[in-house]
Length: 179
Image (cartoon, rainbow, N blue to C red; front, side, top):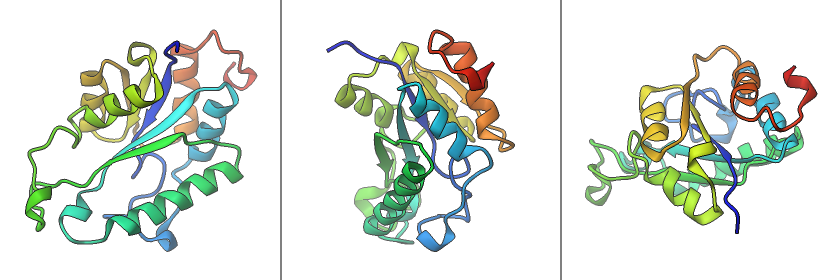
């Protein structure tokens, strides 16, 4: 199977508004431009993956099932607006985890690259032609360590950054909205 480029996105404060360890569906809200960015990536056939540190699980602040419920809601909301999220990888580890087996160090917690590389293996992604976008330096570091192009999102408008990414890395994919 031929490897394809993909988009890797952080979750909290890149796609959804972070309210500090966001896990309740009732707290869900989009970051400006996020639905449009997801739709843009989907329209051109790029697979979109979320890679997210979820240290609140290790810290005992919420259960893994709470996170899955939130992620399922995010996926459904994206689909309703024309976007598609192929898969989500998460790291439950944290340096201050109350669950000893979830106390770092680990290879998956960003800036580690394991979430990205595992998704790439599973979905046959060409990391050299892929892009990671996140709001923290650790997101950028994870993307670069995995071999992706990486962008730091400043929180203003994800759709504007998505259009820039399309023009810089995927100009061969015809998207009138990016012109």
